[in-house]
Image (cartoon, rainbow, N blue to C red; front, top):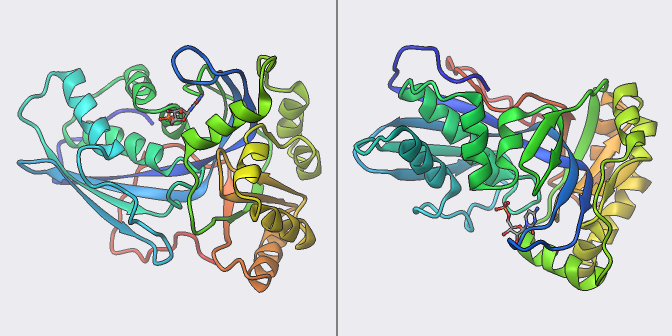
Length: 320
Ligand code: C5P
């Protein structure tokens, strides 16, 4: 991340990545309505671009890639990007600032890929740069944590552990260039609903979650077969119970040649880990042939939020 060191500009664009969870260990529901987590995040190459510019009143504008459904994304004060902007203003005691926030979405909505958290993280950094606020990384992480469990990781990027309710992030050694085929689904899943169903299915006696040492070793080794054997998500069973048709995507992925299939976060996006770059394109082709038209290729890990400068360059995101 690294907060601003440039002179004030008319507009600033910041890019933020999608996240996946290579391990999502969930504990018993806690007093604050959250579950203790032990997770391993990875940032992958699907992105939101947020452009901010000075304006008298706050406003949010959405654009997206052709196959993204934006109908469920609010453009009022409840949008996480606006809440992030307002929190940053409160933090700096700014009472007369407002901005136009333009969100170019490339991450499926309600897909378990933390697109809203990416918007919040990108907005924090973009406004910090626009107004030359020089917010410390620690303060950005703290502001992010107050906005949502996945926001600090969107700031950090790469591969990281997440403890607490997911907001306590620390970088993790990752020796791999991993290739994911990402298979979104037309209808999103509600994160609270999936956590609630986790509670219903697991009953009493849920052990405290932990990050397995073998997963750390597999990540450091860079060996995709080793990583494939360690992928795990405690929300997979409840999500599959709520959406049984997702099983077909898992089966199709393995039949297409993926090393492993994993639910992304609270779903319903399915992640297919592939052996290498050539392999992931083959798997994507096979998934499209099997009827999963929206399958896309994404590398990981990628950096967290960062400023981008377009100089009439063609948009090459998510090239297939
Ligand atoms: O933090 P975030 O806003 O992403 O959380 C959305 C919802 O997901 C929470 O309101 C809660 O119902 C559920 N959640 C949880 N335990 C976590 C993270 C999220 O129960 N650690």
